[in-house]
Image (cartoon, rainbow, N blue to C red; front, side):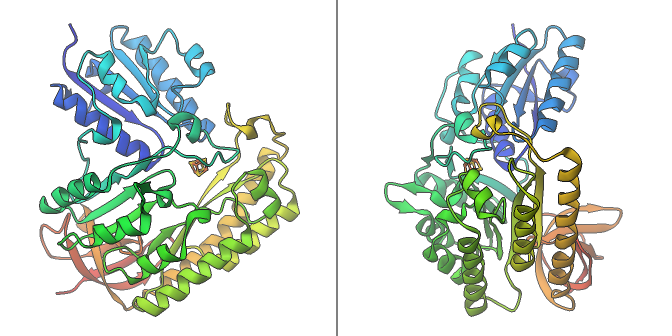
Length: 422
Ligand code: SF4
């Protein structure tokens, strides 16, 4: 008889965090209780990430140790690694249930509980004031390096009415920030309701709250979407728009279906629209870049460096290419050495430091609304609408989960510093 304590170990992105909230929701509905100590759990779910080898190796190590020390514990493996044959073979004596993330409900079925569709599961939200709301899952794009279309299947959008109902309830319960999630969030399409229309519907929900969304694909970033964001009062001035490479040759090998010129044109349009409709704070633009993709020559790399200077990013998540089994790029020759990848990443990081600092300096002396997330050693920590982390001096009490007016007194490369004002 299975007793009732669970622990979920989550690797990777916000989509995985959101999935884990859904797994927790359904486990608790079925009388499981969370434990903060993995060794005290009867059921441990590893929600894995297959984007980088490092995350994969960490999961193997933890599963191995857990099984060695707790032979009776029930181990479930889900996430990106769950449908890989090589992973299943490697862990067949250590993992009890392999469950593809697109069939997350079957975890529950295997444990003997009733099931419902993934997007209908009521999650157990980790934070009350800032909540991740999946609006679609899966991906149709098949970028040559990516496991997502294989792990999650094709795109499925969630009915707009269900999304609106979930958000209305969250706002009623005091939530201040909604992040709409999807692998390709801006290709949302449910019975002809497309993403800009969905955003307009969410905007109309009464209450004082912010709207964010990740991740957008440049090929689906329409003029209508730019206009909707720029005109909105609730959608935050932060757009995450992964470029991956500044070389058109590499973008084609990656199967990204846009060019560097198209991408830069989008950024120009976004900045113009924001100037027209928004305040004097510019839109913060962030990105993902893969360094050392197969076939990336010095010349290709320099094109990425040039694009970064033009884009004036606030933040970039760099990843050195590592071949992921099952993808098209896995069969390509990984011909940029580890040392060269690190060197290229460092060069790009230096460009980022300059643009990030110069963007942050534009906030000096301004008073902004900040959503407070936490307090440590007498200082509050929060984020601006544009996603900047702010360290805040304040004598005010109980600010966590609230909006506060903060005057920015210092700009650093990776964050801002400020103090609350009345
Ligand atoms: S758009 Fe490309 S990188 Fe993003 S999830 Fe789909 S296949 Fe992966």
